[in-house]
Picture (cartoon, rainbow, N blue to C red):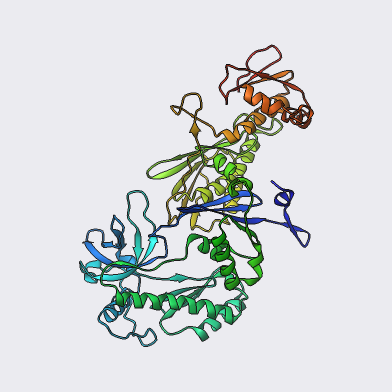
Length: 531
């Protein structure tokens, strides 16, 4: 890692978060890593041939009505039918169906002159509005996950840089994150002056302070998307896709790009040009932050992403000072167990130690939820806290750690048993990374920790013995290959660096009978040290 990568960004004397987007393009997918201060916080894998992404608009055909569930199965081209609940028809479901009928029948329909129908009743029946075999425009609300088909909605919307367009509505809404009443009123007046009839608009947080020309350009591009849907609806005779959402790279740029974004780096020349072109359109002043990676090392290796993926996606996630998380996935929920390990501050009380470990774990849990995009119900078993004020401190720390999570989530206060329940909305499958590797000794019948973390593991245990346990005359036994790696270069070897770093000497002994990733520590009496 270069010195440039390590240095935090300073503005006006204050240290701000360095935010980098690293994009690794393959033949079949694009991997997108978001780093904050060089720490991996989000990882997205986008299939380049993904046909059912959130935001895509389809003309669907009703396959089956389910009166008991007040829902319908709709064909959109996936091998499992999409699920449409009555409430997902939206308040303007009648207007959508009326508009579809007029377009399909060949009428020249103008949104400006279209007469909206009354809102749907909340307790209505889907069978009163849909029939088997009919076509209707729908939007992917949730991608296919596991054995389930896509979740769809007839309440179509298009998200832009500053605005969200909602056809068949005349309502103007402003993001609650825009606090200034004066600015909220200004934005409402601007949108009201440029908004055509029968197009509702949601004003996004990033629109704060923007000029009418920027908002108008964004609005026009979104209206063009809906007009394209109308053209496709008139042309199509059966179900299929009408409009595709931008690819995940463009969506992340649209949603994440702000003044704190420092670098966007990709290894694909076409993607590099596309991103620069996109930035020239939405934020010309940020176009120079895009870089093309031309180094010999793979882009994820060069920016330390691969190592972080290997270290943070396993069942056991080590934080620091021996603290670790155990993450289990069940059919109904995710369970996270917080463990203090063996390294606690002897000067603190057990309650203080528990609070310190829990707060450290809360920060990592918030990052893990974003990194793995875990959704549904998450139960966290923190270390028990006896005092209610400490449980409140833990709850506040978790809320603060998750404030940057863009997914909708709810956190309940800790129980007296140390359990905290989190619900988190997810619209895409959870990110799963296989981090275990085949054992070089047993030819794949067993599993070991990733090889690239092996030396870090040795150093962590060595530090614990030398510094925390104050052991002396330690002998580290390793395979001859590892011995050469640690001791080669004499005075400049890794062993010498560790001796200087921790202020204590130790021996390294080559053991030919050891397998490649086996190691052991001996004390001054030549006895094995159990870790």
